[in-house]
Image 1 (cartoon, rainbow, N blue to C red):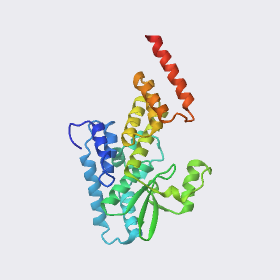
Image 2 (cartoon, rainbow, N blue to C red; image 1 turned 90 degrees about the vertical axis):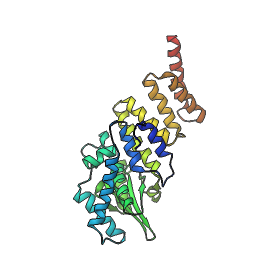
Image 3 (cartoon, one colour; image 1 turned 45 degrees about the vertical axis):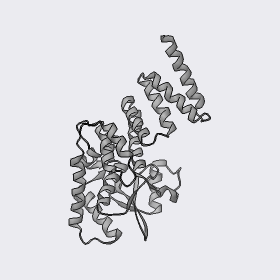
Length: 279
């Protein structure tokens, strides 16, 4: 990270890069840096480098996708003890890459970021998979795809296993589709990390941190109208009335016939009346 520059500004510069130039780990650490202002990303990036070197040193003879994945799994989950945090799944620390690397536990998407970053350093053709309710990784080569669940110690998943993951989250209401295994971009991974944080903070009524998550979501993708609406609502909760009204007006301009348009208009009327009564 460039010293002296605010984390938000660095984050914007990082996500503006092309897909291959976007350093996922650096961007994820910049998300964490707003929570940990003194965070230095260099030791963590160097740690990922060393982890990849250690996998390579220990498993020089591993060839073919099955052997390479087995070597990576043994190192991360047996030697280092990375695991999914099933005890305190909604702890915000599970979404911060520095904490995940220090504590060796996290949620599916952040454990997957570690898996991806180490695998990429080893030249593995890995991609994140935005599977509903449970982020996954896949290894893709000319022979086909292997679907991996880093949250569950790098388990290899069949379509039936994928249905099982859906059943755990949705109670049988969602049926597996092959499209659920489509690869996602690094920006989409960052959006999902930030969306998870937003949900955690909203559940805890931490409006300031929820707003910070939404603001960074809109840095990654400024076209997300629901996030503009939510930014406006959060700004109003924080007494940022003028900016809140501007956000909701913009949301209605973008989506004049959206299902919640009347509710948003009602909120705007109430807030304008409250403002007028103060003048």
